[in-house]
Image (cartoon, rainbow, N blue to C red; front, side, top):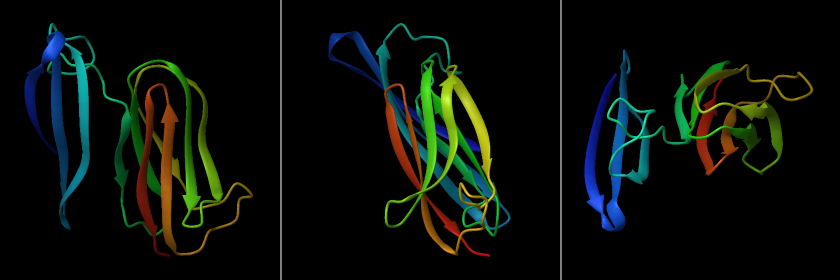
Length: 144
């Protein structure tokens, strides 16, 4: 795994950090996430570089998948979180997370099944994370 970051100072004493995380596997290198966070320039607890945790979808692995996929997400503050899977027409396929969560990172697994427990067809799906200060969507490709 690798991480690169850039830091800069904005007006009103705010610091912004922008980064990309990349993961290498036998198939090559995959860019996982790009995030941006503004915080007081004195820094805060939560990130190794003193910046707060940035809310968002992190790693979806493996993607494409032939069945199950691990979805890693982070939220910067405690609160109600929903993590859903939608098909290309916008219909809810499966709700993976629905409830109160503490700030931090969590990984959940989608087994390629609908809310009813039946397997879903091959195709493109979208994971949507909704939580305190975040609404993020990432694409998942399912190939049986």
